[in-house]
Length: 404
Image (cartoon, rainbow, N blue to C red; front, side, top):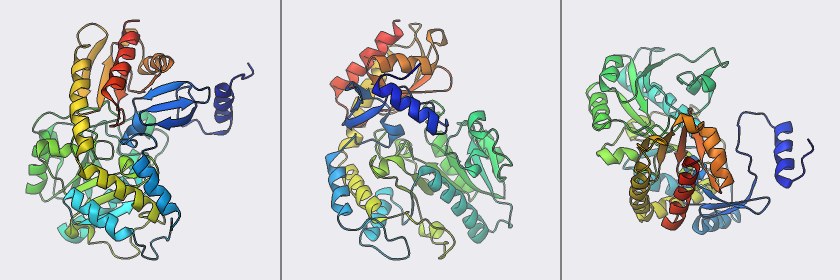
């Protein structure tokens, strides 16, 4: 059938000329502001995904746009061959925000995770004394840390892992939330434990109370680095600077990304102590665009906004409302379970009502955009700037879909 609308023509062209490594909902966005997006036909949609938390501060946030514009007129890239006048301030402010000492900036979240893996291994060989080639990192089942060859080597998701071997060795996978299994896996060659404080792709899985403090205590006792992947969960999403903070836990290393770039430019970073990141010497790791002036300018504005505490407070208050309303849906036959923290929720829909993809498509027709994951689960993660009225409207559309 010949495409007749702008949406159909755009989707047909994308299907014909781009690799099918994603299966987007059939909507073509042309503009966006705040928590709303408008498609090429002029229809508006409430964004309840926020770019997997990359858009915590909403679409077209004026403070971030103006920061980017100011920097665009000055300098956008020097490479790390030279210093630039935004780099030192960015590293200083991010280290202070995290309560750490040093920053290693990259671009994407996957790059930051790869950097964390390399950092942990270097620390294990240079500081802990692990014999060369034997460093081991313990990770959790159902993790999602990215899609590079090394990262999918310790994925348990067949779609992410299949057909990409041979796989990188040096990782042991244990059940998420099982402290005893973690303790059993840590041995003299273990250099780090890498986990998400809340597993996003797995369906917004929150570990049992005491798990994160237990990981912190275990890693400290065994002289192992605790690496927290806060790429999705950090920077206000859960109502705190970091999801770890809900249990007063400070890891040895944060892995950050997504919201750090304000939805404008890709910015990621590994943040840790001088003892750990200070082991790097020139030429041992790098990135042409990592820590570029434009990225630093936007990230500095993100950090300034977070220091006010306004967005964390919004995520806390609106998150309580979100989870209260979602909780009322459990037990009525339409929703089996709800999990999450702050403005972040995983909703397990009764499979009899449809797959997560089908539920997402029905919501799209009503003007709400969400993302499915793993069977009949959908994820809700609206921008932190969403109003209570808009949030309630989106929930009303969900109720309509669940009512059939």
